[in-house]
Image (cartoon, rainbow, N blue to C red; front, top):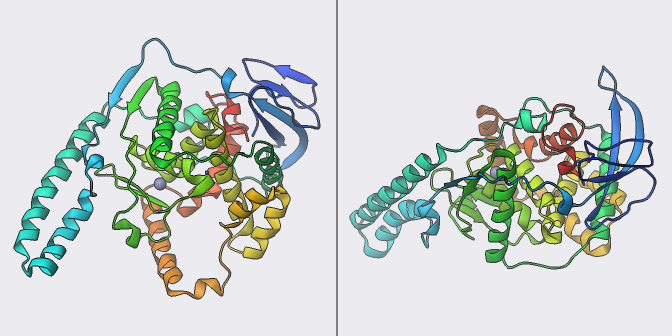
Length: 387
Ligand SMILES: [Zn+2]
């Protein structure tokens, strides 16, 4: 799973322009939506921090423009493979093996495998044709930032944001959980709406989520996976408070966005704009945990020190504390070492595909929201990146 707004005025009493209400002062207030703390940093020509003035920003999603025009193009990605009871990739790999173990013969499994391959490729071809009509978001134009134009946050700004996130999460804490089936539908609706706001295209995709695929064993560090050919999304465990963001991230991929930075950012923005307390909480939890990861730099002690800044209520502290990196002793386990090896390979694969590597999940993600918040060129309202 960073704050500010186009209508923000530092130092003035209360400013309102174009919908969102912004007030400058010392304490957070709430106006029908959730309280949001913002902090504006002015940068000099050299990029250094010249002055910081504290701004409290209140953004109510209800007053944000909905953006649905009267003409809305609708593109449906059939995603037939996602409705198969077992992942087709698993069937292709598993059928010959099962056949050998159960029947002592390879051929029946190979026949099954070949016919499944036909289904898999047929579904992929239909999805590919449907996707060809999508107008993808131009991130640089809409948000004033993309993978290669990220401005780094200072450590001071990160620490300040941890405080703001902790404050907002404490105030809006909800223990409510939504069953995964319903949650996936809800997340998909909000994500579709958010992207449609920008592109005026409704990209309709499946809300199916698997709880198991063989990829679980290939990428043990991953909380979820996306199969870019079949469109299959798998979420391997209950991610608790984070779950809406995790599902949203994978669903962004399903809607045609391959880069991890884009998946992180669109998932956050859609959850933040949803107006649903459970979804907003998930986005904030992701953002906070990623800020803490960057500040920790792999050290459990530094993570816990940064976590103190958030002053979280006990329920949240326990949840966010679970993502604390393992110390050296903990990483001695074989499984973690294998996981580390796969992470290195995955990092390399990301770099080869025009991304910045695994840092796009946390450092890139938080830098994106920071740069968007301070962009003078972004077409989208900057309060979308509010805390
Ligand atoms: Zn991803």
